[in-house]
Length: 395
Image (cartoon, rainbow, N blue to C red):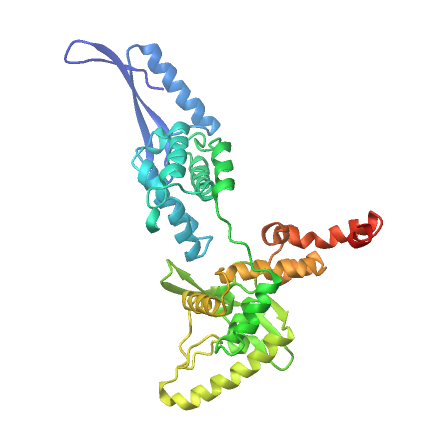
């Protein structure tokens, strides 16, 4: 093992230096570190520390890579495992961290850096709409922080940093309480509102596709339906393909997100009958348009056969809600109303999860089945009996 060399600087200062072989980087390139200290003992101690850590597998080589550069590498790595739409969501989630901390070297990033960024993002992080620079929900920032933690966990695995500086960063209790108190949550439609919508759009051309949303399909699943996926003779609908959108502009056709999402559902009577009628209507439109018709095979198309994307379907649904006089809810929120209705009707959890396209029944109920006061009316009536009779009899 080489001994530290004595060197004399221009100003006459004596120092000691040695070159240490620190192994190889992730690309197989040899890592050599130059250690310079005031004394020979200090040089030897530092050399021994590096060699010991190298032997133990805990050595972290100095690196100039910034957080922004690492996030780029991490996103590229994640492309192996997730859909393009998910990558776009990850990029969006990391926007604030990249803007505020992206130039900081990864090895210099601290818990305080990240905590300050989280607090600032909640206070002023909104980037769209007429409220740019105002408060962003704590829930949104928690999701962003989850993505950052995942990226930094990977950096630990690749031995770029010794520990994850975001591990113990949290959204404050005060911010979570403020979020809960001030955030406006759109409630899914009630049973009465669903029935009002169904009656009000009975003559609409896209009545059948909208009914698919009201049997629990995601908008991307509705838009991804082909006629070959639907057995109109036996009333079975198969979900194998989705047509989703990236940045509300680019359409991507892909398989279902999970194996549980690929499923077959029996058609309720109303959607079944309306799909039969819609198929006949499309046949007539095809004959009327002649060569101008686009025979795409999709169910959700316009009068010339051009497939509609989720944005166009959503906008059409909003117009129908306004026409009927109902409050606006997302088509995806109709899924909440459907699954809640099935749960309250006593559908077994395992069937509820399978209908939703989930693996975990408890997730389905936790995410989609929120109980309101009116939903517990039966419990109040049961207590009337328990108390000795109905209210009128007691008065």
